[in-house]
Image (cartoon, rainbow, N blue to C red; front, side, top):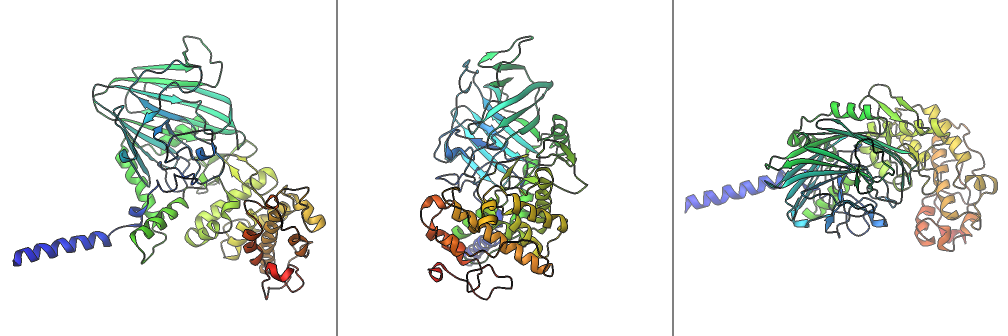
Length: 543
């Protein structure tokens, strides 16, 4: 009896220890958000990495923004770049499709069949994704470094081990105006493509190295095998690679990416070379996530609460994305390539309208180093375009959404003492952007409001500008009363008279935008105050 009690208490002790030792990373489920209209991806990446290696299940519709949707039951393949949580689709570059079949000689659509799967055979965790294609006899696993994606495909013994690299795969209605793919070694393929889509002139260069030599490589164009001196006549190009009969030894592939050049893609691959040791690279990716997710700890709540919380924290670290290479080079918005000083990094994919209210202030608490790197990136974009960015992606500007909220981001950081950037240059960029921004500020500066019969989302535009002006005013007080902006004393009642009709708002209506008005400090006559505010006015006070 005594021995049974000892065993019982020992088991109880083990159980309690295992619960206590559960780390934040153990709560994260990357599949959360991949259904409905969440537009997140489940694949492998590291915090703010340049590569997001993930399965694609669809293309060409709004719920293909991240390439993957939980309601789907077939995977097209695995591409190396993805967006998370956006309302517009782009990226999905360089698709790899493992198969045990021959390619289909079709000139329209994919030259392969989709891979059927079940969510029961799928696993996702920070820095890792796997799925077992039981019908085809292939297990696929993915992990990543900052600039590379690593694949591990295990083919059932005696089955044909083949791989298709599809350069024509796109998630959205884009055009490919430049493309190359070539064999550059007995186990190496490299290439590039430039697309015109949501963001213009998006360059992706890659170098892929394989753990096994090729048995054969065929270049496919419009469903036909190119021979000898044949020249591709369209961007519908694939490589069909055969490795022979499988002996059940995994095929490991590491793919280096760059927006600058093939040479830099190779440099990134060499700098982060995993020696085809998938488990080691996965471990390194996991450790980066352990560190990143440990920035915030919570107490109390249920297991489901913690799962939701830490998965949300995980999603806050998928964008923006690193765009500078391991040697510090990056492609500017003017398409030139330059090199950063040692230790500096360049980021893009800033969904600023979505992030300036909450995500950016969060970063000022948990990662001030990232905040400085981001602001320096915004200022480098200003150097190229003469204006702070609105929604930059890759080496281009999408111009999506309203306002010029990069001003709020910079001012918020400055006011919190985060100043690892050129503050004089930042001030100039903020002022210049407020004068030339194409989102309606010219009307506001001249008239004090934006006419709704001329500009869509006019009310939301003005409210956004008022929030930015508020950030300016706080900066101005910090700079001992220096005059920064003029014409910021316009009466808000000119705006509020327009609070009718959905077309005057950006993804909202008058009730939803009341919260923004409540957050704008006013004096008793409805002007933006020059001194620190003493009250806040709501809609009902303006009638």
